[in-house]
Image (cartoon, rainbow, N blue to C red):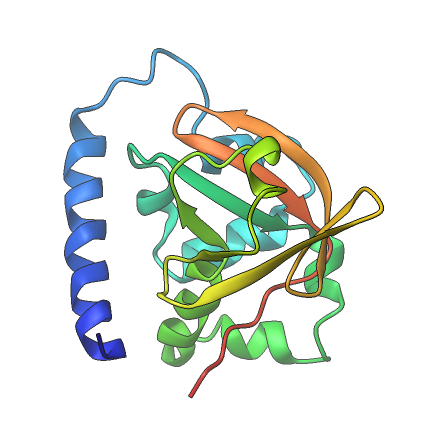
Length: 166
């Protein structure tokens, strides 16, 4: 399937998720976004999610697995990159980057270590490798696993994942 076709499907899927989320009651448990906000080490990520209009999606029913880069991970980007991505005219590029951090389903650490790749929300695959007790997603090291949210699970990573932006 070409990227445009996947993009249309992704938009339709995200719209459906938002509609279901509006009807869902999570019983007071925090969703992925609220969990990230409460952790306080994801301020940049939350700002980026807001700029990309993805907050509603990640508050949706899911389940989602979110490889969440910390503020320190965003700080590793070349100078000016984040400011450029947060501009309204770069919203599509920012969405592509952020959806590259999301995998459909609740993939716990026990399942992640058995994978060699996973397809992300933007349609591209990430590589997953395990060596000596260290798990990597592409070149990002997973530094904390299995932070449970009402609509999925968060695994914290130390580097922003950058998809192929052809």
